[in-house]
Amino acid sequence: MGGRHLVLTGELIGQVERLHRYPVKSLLGEELSAAEVSGRGLAGDRARALLDLASGRVASAKNPRLWAGLLRYSALATADGGVEITGPDGRVADEAELSEALGRKLALIAERPPGAAVERAVPEEVLARGMEAEVPVTVNELGRAAPEGGFFDFAPVHLITSAALGAVGAEAERYRPNLVLRTAGEGFVENAWVGRELAIGETLRLRILAPSPRCAVPTLAHGPLPRRAEALRMPAERNRLVPLEGMPALPCAGVYAQVLAPGRIERGAEVRLDRAPSPGR
Image (cartoon, rainbow, N blue to C red; front, side, top):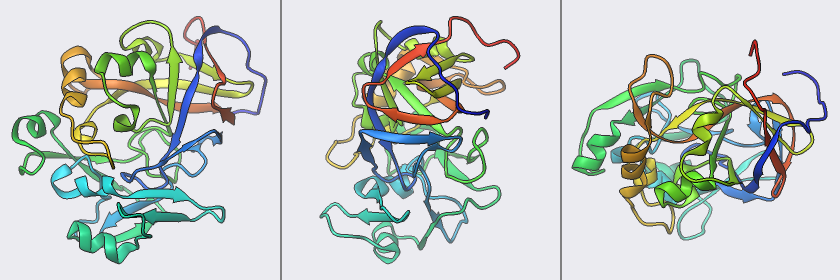
């Protein structure tokens, strides 16, 4: 990770428009004005998850037939390092209430079990047959590009640009990014950043690893936001990419990143892009 150092080089490409963290995986999260960012991402992000005790897998709305209802609940990080979960009526919800509402026995966990995985319904099948249909799923191990701890799909930071959101015509909340960057240009401009580095503010430095493949989650109701099939259909039509070697072309929007140098991030911070890929990275 390296020590803290001043990062002011590179092309100015935009600024941080919004910051989000999600204290419990697949629950609604909270918007922030500032956050500390370490190698494990934004402080408190994806720090907990709900474990399906019957299957031993982490509950995720990526399999909407079972878990779309998770997106009716919100999680807030508390000052003592804990988390508070509230239901759609604003009342605090515990594991027993969540288990009853979702119809499966759940446990709130803070340590990622070895080999922790989620089920991901094939997105095109969900689009074609509906979220209640029993469709094929893949089983994906969590956090392959993240440090130990946390419940990240792949890497500890996920970002999307205003240009990409304009291209898909959907709200940022549907894609659950940590960072929304206000940038110039049109379309999926962050595709060109893979393999390059972003400097945000004075110290934070990120390396962009891969495009973010989209699942059925953006199509689901998120709290007051209604279901919207176009949130997946538009990336499927306009931005199909191979996220990693060996994978098929998938609908993508946004990118995943790892943290090269930690730091504090604030809304409005400038974002700079290295002029060329860093050699040897």
